[in-house]
Amino acid sequence: MKISAFEMKVGNLMEHQGKLWRVLKLGHVKPGKGGAFVQAEMKEITTGTKLNERFRSDEKLEKAHVEPRQMQYLYAEGDNHIFMDLTTYEQLGLAEDDISEQMGYLLPNMEVQINFHNENPIGMELPLNVVLEVVETESVVKGQTATSSGKPARLETGITVTVPQFISAGEKIKVNTGTGEYVERASS
Image 1: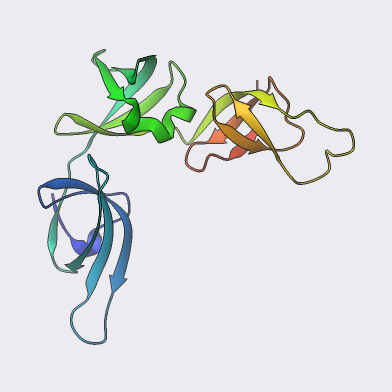
Image 2: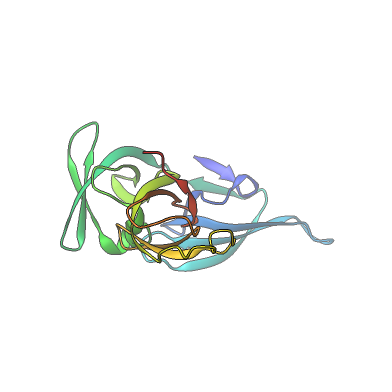
């Protein structure tokens, strides 16, 4: 689907120079002289190469067709992580390098959305928040619970987040997958 450069949004997948790019930043510039243009910072999906490109605002670009599929994370097998399509029950392996930033929020049996472009997986979208158990954190010292500072807590997946003083080991907490921050105690 062709769209004008002016219609691009951050996060869009675009086909440009025969490759697939994710738009990271956009700037709309209307200089005093000459025509308006769009300054776009993009990252190539497969290699991670970044590109700063300037497009005339009326220039047409190809927006990539992305097919989202609901999948369930099953298990790790070496450096591969196995997912099952919830519609066809087919299994798919994704390399750890491709999803390394998201691994700290992934638990077995969790449902995620995997996006495909031309039948190739190009990315995974996690739920906004996930519930994880605190396995290790400092104990609360009496009288220090009123302070607003947090303390580090190691979670069951191995990541560390800053939590309020009143959280202790064994509790389940809700963590934002986009920011990696503590949201709230999870209701049991």
